[in-house]
Every structure is written in structure tokens, then in C-alpha cells.
Figure 1: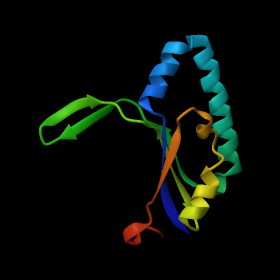
Figure 2: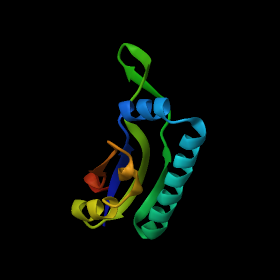
Figure 3: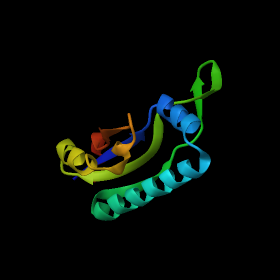
Amino acid sequence: MKKFFVLFCIPKTTMDEWMAAVDEPTRKKQSEDMMRSWQTWTKKNEKSILDYGLPVGKTKRITSKGATDARNDINWYLVIEAESSESAVKILKEHPHLQIPGAYIDVSDASMMGNDK
């Protein structure tokens, strides 16, 4: 089995538009509904999940010139196990995160250099 690092991403513009267009009570309900869908997906795929990850918040970008506040599209990460990248895609293609307009999932093979034990 191989390990895959999964990033759940939402374009910054999508988040900005949602925050501007949707009132707080509606956003809260939408977020709760999405989390229930995530929990259902997680339960269905729990045998493949090695690290349930965390939501990703505010970002600091560090360069040789110092650190600054930054924004990116990353919303959450997790680590899964699958036979191949095609198998990982099959696990993720029905994830409820993809119901968010413009959302995407990046999945990277993390089994390189002998870390696939």
C-alpha cells in the first residue's frame, strides 16, 4: 500500500464571494451540513485514512527576506492509504468537498524514499 497526502482546496475568490453573499446563520448551517457530509464520507472510507488531518487556517509565508501574512487555497489536509494513485483518486472522487463551487482536491504520492512501510 502507498501513502497519499491529500489537500482539500477552495479558491480564495470563492471564499470571499461566499462570505460577502451569504449571511452568517446560513453560512453556519451550510458549514454544519458540509461537516456532516465529511463525517459520512470519512466513516465510509475509514479503512483508507491514516491521518484525519486538520483544517488549515491563517498562513505565514517565509522566505529568505522574512515572514509575511499570506493566503492560499488550502482548507484541510489528510493522509490516506491506497494501492495506487488511481485507487486514491477513486476514494476521493466522491468526496463532498467537491460540491463546493470551484473546489478541488490535490493528492500526492507520499510513499517516496522508503516511507511506504
